[in-house]
Each structure stands twice: as C-alpha cells, then as structure tokens.
Image 1: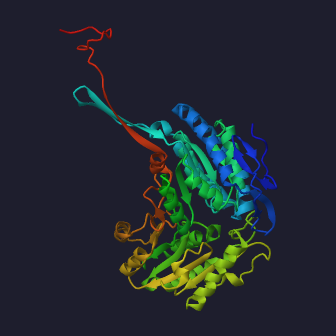
Image 2: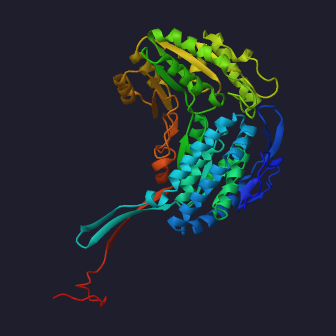
Image 3: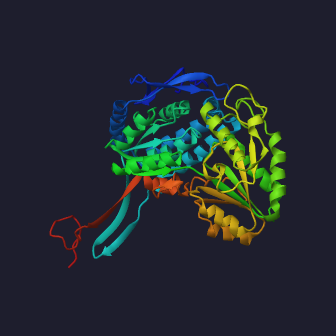
Length: 504
C-alpha cells in the first residue's frame, strides 16, 4: 500500500526510477519555493544526460514487457489509478498549492480535468479497435491494427503540474508504452505523487518514470535514439525548439506553445455574464494558464460599461496565500516572473494604455511573489502588452467599432490557442465559429478547454506539428498503424489436408 503522503514530501525531490525514489548523481540541484512566502522548501535534483540515458534504458525494458499485457489488464490498472487519484485529490491539490501557489480550489479543478483524461483512457479496449474488410479481393482479407511506440516522453510546464502530465501519460500507458516524465523543476513534487499512485494501482515498475532536470535533461530526451515520441506544453519559443530538435532526430513531436487569447464582446452581450466570465478567465490561477483570457475586444458602445463592470469586480478578489481559506488568487510562480509581469504593466502605461486597476499598487502580502489584478484600457496592437504572452494577472481591453474589425484583429494575431465570443445573437456566434482562425472556440464560454473525448490544441504559433493533445488524437499519437493483407488456402481446394470435408 502507498505510504501516507504529506504536503511537504521531502526536503530533497529526487527522480522516480524503476518504481522507487532514486537520488540524483549529477551533483546539480535547483531550489523549490513556496511562492506565497518566498521561502525555499526543497532542492530538486537535476539529471545529467547519462542519468536520462539510464532512465530511458530501464523504460525500454519495461515497455517491451508492458506491450505484451492484455487490454483488459491495462484497463484494470487505469481504473485502479483513477480511483486512487480521485480519492487522494485533496492531498495532491495541497502539494500543488504549496509549490505553484494557485488556490486550493484551482488545484482541485486542475486534478479534475486530468482525471477526465484518465477516465477516457480506461476505454482503451474500445479505443484501439481496428477495422476489418473481408474479401477485399478473392480470398483476401485486409485489416488494420495500432501498436505502441515503445518509450515516449513528456516535458511539462509549471502551471499545471498534475493536469498536463495526465493529458499525456494516461493515453500513452493505456496504449502500451512506457512513459518518461520530465516535469518543471519549479514545482516537481506533484510528479512523484502521481508516480506513487501508478505504483499502487499495479503499474509494473519502469512503465512510468520521473526524471527531474533543466535543459540538459530536455536535450538528452530529444536526441536519445530510443525515445520514439515527445509531448510538450510550454512557451512558443521552447515549443519551436522542442519540435525542431525532436523531429530532426526522427521523433514524433506534439509541441503546444503560447497563447494570447481574445474574447470578442458584442454590443448585445449580457454584460454581467460577460464580465463575470472574463474576470474568472483572466485572473484565475494568477493568469498563469495557456487558456487565460488576455485581451477583451469590446465592440462599439459596450466598451465603457464592460470596462466599468470588470473594474467593479476586481477589488472583490482576495489575493493571498492559496492555502488560506477565502483566497481567490494566489502568487506568481517566481519573483523574477512577478517582476517581468509588472514590467509589462510599466511598458503598457508608458506606451499609452490607460491603467484602470493597478496591480502594482495593490494591497498584497509583502512576502511571496504577489502582484494584484491589473486592468488596462485603450490597448492597441502595437503595444507589448498586446503582442507578448504576459502569463500573469493582466487584462487588456482593445476597442473596435465593428464585429468585422474585431474578427480581423483576432485572426491577425500570431497566437491562435483559444478564443471566445459573448453575444445573444446565434447567427453572429455561428459566423464567428466559422470565420475565426483559432483552434479552440467558446461561445459564451470563456475558457473553451475541450472535454477529454475531444482533443486540445491551437493553431499558428500555438502549435508546432499537426497533432493535438489527449483524446482521439492522443491515442493516434502514441500508436502507429499497421495494415495486414492476408490470404489463406481455401480448405476445399488446398492440397494440404486441413481436416475439412472436401467438395467436388
């Protein structure tokens, strides 16, 4: 049975190899902080290339054995893992809050969305069914099967230390692969908690591994000849690097990049619905979400009341320690990132944006990496607060005169992860979903993350490659197709005695 897990798992966060915690040997570590206090709570081992190679070698052995497991055996492990994850969500959420800083409710929500992907993967016997054509030619049958790749890797971001790994590993393992996770070194303990749950669920040792590290570990995974595929979620520059390096070394790569998500608010929109949704989507998890709304595009005369409605709501949000009862928004992940986000507000103000609500002057805890909610009006497409992915609690409002002007603005943006429209007009909504050049679209839904039986991914600079994450595309990504064409002797005419009665 799994030993009791406490929020602070250890003062040293080490790798998970062959079903147990293994201390690193590189001699290099990085600090892990509690963002709410700024205190260093642990040191995480950073793997060398040789350590990564050893992990991959063990994963390769495990993959060969796991591939031979039956679909019902795999499903049984997944069902057991699902129950453990569900029952221990609160423990995992507390670990996430202690290292990421998001409020407990946000952490529970993250786990719930990851749990959906595990539930999808439990259907692997159905998901891996192929097709069969009898008599494709005289005496010839044709059918297709899907087979696992072997060792696959996931490189995941700090902002969802549980959900994004679950996007990847559930499908990968269900399909018969061994999965090597390289989580963010900023909040690494959630990965070890998940590893322990897999072990208790009955997953054979070596099928799920965790190797902590920085660029050296990432590069080692990208070039290793025995890693067949790499999944990544993170910023656009790194996604591009992952995709180009991985594919240059013959790997399948799905690399999801950054975002600059817009909400188009039409004059007929329900103002309270739109304002509530935009505040939740822009400032939840301190804006450190790839699906966070970053820009509100206000059409026509709704601009003034929309800005007023958002500004009215922001002082009601309680900013503080995510572990404290009643907190609505926690800190940012590091001091450096907090200062970078504040620098974008400085630049926006200097470039002519109107600071309606100033998070730099907010009454927030002195310790930790806090920044208050910020609302900027009169943002224009030339400003860095518009062009760059800020990844913080900063919302910019761009004013346009018409729907067509707003649509053109969204379609011209190099990021195309998610978008939303707020309107009471079904025709306008249908036109928007038809015309907008973005991968995920919400209609009066501010964060249009697909449910687990669809797939997640953007367009343009928000995705490198052509494969989206989880769902049906995840199953395809972690398997490869094989088509078999077969002809067998007709028992009635074969010269070999097959034991069947012959006809004349």
